[in-house]
Image (cartoon, rainbow, N blue to C red):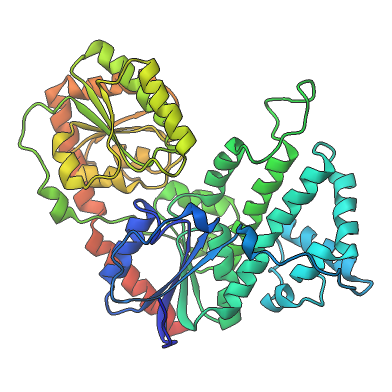
Length: 498
């Protein structure tokens, strides 16, 4: 897609989401663009490698006028080996000063020009190929990195930094815009920070979940990060140096986004408090909950009566959703109610290895007749046939699937993560109280999850009460039109004051 008119109202910085990934944040972004047809949007998609993504999965709205895709770990995009540049004598000191400041999170990042200056100490050629950089990396390894091999340390340091120059080049070439908006920190938030400073434009940041927390979970499980400790050196309570290095890197990117953005939006109060704990100024935070199409989903409500013996998990088949606990819950439920079915509705292509493990667990537990992997389905085809939503995640923000189910009259059993306690039991400012819309259980506890499901499925009165609370809470707090109006006013306010 090409566009020559520079008059873009809002440029969206999108990491691994819209328009190449379905569901979750992507659906939210699509609704936002579609709900503000009087604004012109651009989208800058950041991905890992080209081969990790397929075609565009949405019919792009007419006011989505510019799209770019940039891949941060594509080998073909890396420059070839070149002659090492000669740097001034003070370059090593400046490298050390930059990294000390970034780790501490006190100073602003370098201006964009510093990343683009190939003759300076922070240019790509300088950091990847100069003798000064080699000396600095070697010194750091000998000083702070006792555990990994030097080869592993060296390549992890290069892989940590390489996306930064891609982001810097991208920021320098972005079309002019009136406002930058990112639904996450990480690479997208850092790109927004650079671009907003380069164009002297406002940057609005929103976190659907706490990015650094979710990346930590991913990094703890990542098999591409080697742990070179032998079995005698390895303490399971300690994180390997390289994993911690990556975690600290994303914490640094998060702090840079927090310093550059205003306002910084979260979906619920606990997330706002976490942002403040992670370095956000209290006065720059704001809560805007997700919104859904209440009218559309209200048509899916079933008439009063016993719920179908079907539990349903709406979500991607990935480790953070802890699908295995959900499957083990299904085994316990089926032992007590043989008529139970457990549906998993969501894509399986993001982590094929984990998906295969989940299918294998279904076979091991002899659940082939009870557990169904249905892939992507429209809510109209699923929700009227479901009795109860179940969410087994180990991390969440404010899950859209939960409030969509609420609007359709479905109670939910969920783990105690993100906004789920608030969704089930009510917001701190909920007056009058609406009652419990389901049950909350601990992480990775299939026995407790199964008991909670049965307490609703086997008790028509408790189920009906939870269903009424779910509907009332969705209608009171999570209406899409209200959310769109709030963002419209927010964008206009910041574009006009710039």
